[in-house]
Length: 270
Image (tube, rainbow, N blue to C red; front, side, top):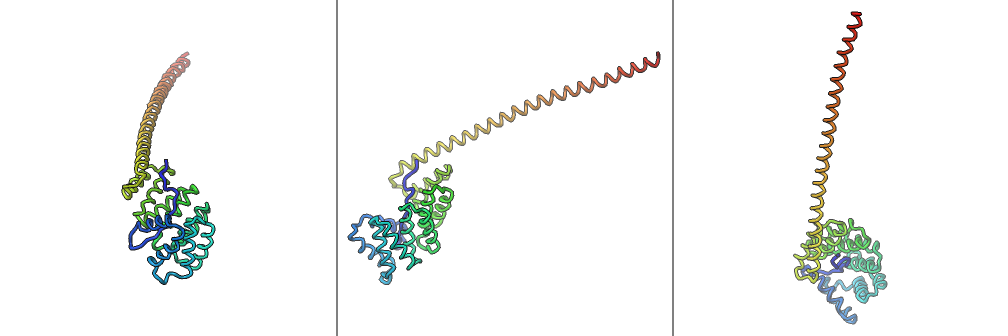
């Protein structure tokens, strides 16, 4: 069982210092009619960047965002690739491009553009690392994905989905105890999640697996100790038998010497 969310990349926005507002905005944007999207993104630009931000590169970004939300990924990719050349400091462009590449199964390209994004990231470093990890997970590079999820969490300890996805990744790695810890952190951060029942079932299954493994290791250790004790007892028995045989041979040699001396003396007398 792998709890859902994996692998899902996030394109995020922040404002007013509120952590989860960026997710609400994107969620809202996904339900806005296409005809209203241009107005929506224009308003976002005013909120985030002020009137001066409505420049050529912002127009490209807005166009790319609209194409993205219309699922016209190839067109959005072309527009956003131009936008990132014009404005390489805009973190959101890297996030959008990374998500588009991922949706097009271009995982290496997604990882590459997001890695470039981490070099300029200020607001969205956590999401950059999170999305890199998701792409690595899809490539079954679970060890590297673990590192990126951890970087994401270090950048933002409140990024709940990073704990959930790292927990799923750790299950794949067989690191069940750490996975349980992450699932519990996620539930603490998202107590009302619709996946609570599934996650609690996963925790119960993993806990049972951990306990069974602990028991197996203990029984294996006891078996090895008993086997070692048996081997030592057998060796002691063999050594004891050899010592007795050696002592018997020595005594026999001494007695034989005495007999030879007597025979020699008898010969002299004759």
